[in-house]
Length: 113
Image (cartoon, rainbow, N blue to C red; front, side, top):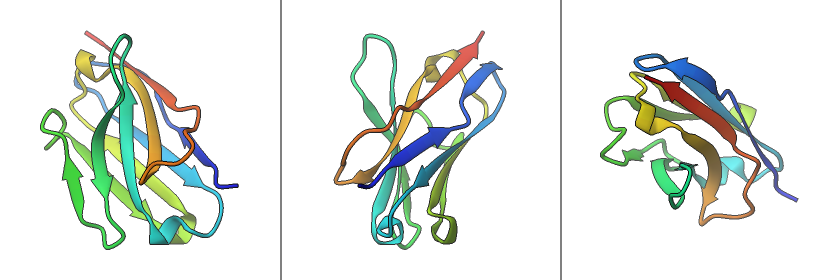
């Protein structure tokens, strides 16, 4: 069973930075497009960043220039570097393959003003 485990969230002041990690079990990681998603209270889950097998990246407009998605296929791990954080970035952050599979627990990011 493929498992994705997110970590690295926390409480940070506006303008601060966090680095999220997504550790994947199994042997398919390097063959899959990966995405980071977030869900704020009362809102639908949204995709914020995607990285393809070749490393090509795309971002939602609200995070472009502040967030960077990357991957280390040797470690079966994806990352989301988040800089210049804003209170509106507060959410539970998840990683998943594309097309999505089972969701993990996510990691809470809280940005105080």
